[in-house]
Length: 406
Image 1: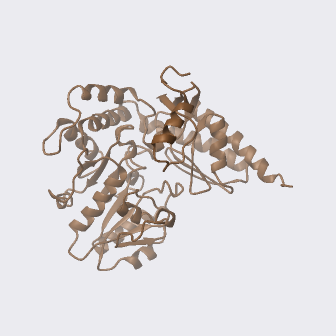
Image 2: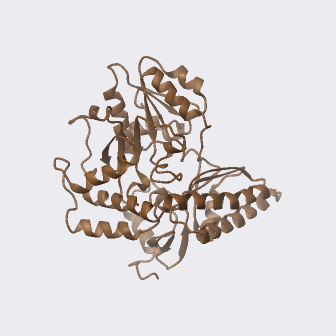
Image 3: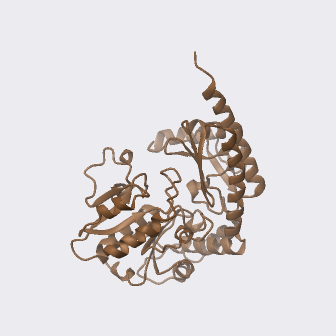
């Protein structure tokens, strides 16, 4: 049994079954400690984690600078309300905005950041303009407005009536977007790369085209960078891949190295419309999360992790491209930085299960897509180890797909 564990996986699972609402499908394993791209269960088994924290652990598990920053901050201030100024919040805001634009509002999650963006778009627009265009296969969060913005019917089931004012367009269809804009439209909301929708990378001209439509119609362009921010794509923020600056940007996941933290960044002339009394977040911008965020930025820069992201991305591409050439079940690779989608011709969930059996953690999304969101600190050896396991698993599944059932 791992010395970090106080009870076995079986004991923890039994406790969950008695006291925790079963709204998640959980693997039958209790995780107890992690370091970098490795994580251990209660029984002491080690796993290579290429999907750490659902992409939140962008520096891997327990990054030393983040751990130290949290420990030091906890001894000084854990929480004070936003009716006071606090040094870490101002410092983190400066670090983010000087690497992007505008001014920052802090909250606790991506869904909260999207809610703030929806409010800000409506508050800043002329009276009567409230509609927001979003995109098929998007994902923006689980709160009611964010789930309405998520243009996937499976997330809407049983939740109606949904929030009024959202219109859905296909990605890469500028004519469809232009056709949806009317005198009541205030914003266009899009993930620069759709994550939950299958790691869908837009055509080169699509995001610049959205910027043009927004400018011509007086709409605000909002980028949901919850998954693409903080170096995930090889630049600080996803929009920098296309050199298209949005008016508003939402952030979370890797923002504070695994600590719960969300943010909204808005252009200077738009930010004041989120005026006092119109929006707030009790724990948003708390000193612990801010200290972790500061340490995350400094780690990325001092350890050259944007460059490492780009190098490891090419290594993944090289390994996975040869696998695609070998196996017909690999229909497409979609890779931007360390945001990786392996689209299969078969369901991806069995691949995730077989990887787990080999102590590799990955994810399945959009039915057929094997998704990886490795830490920016991932090493060449870990890339090779993970790709070798994925190759073995996909070869096995390809063989099973070719074997006729009797």
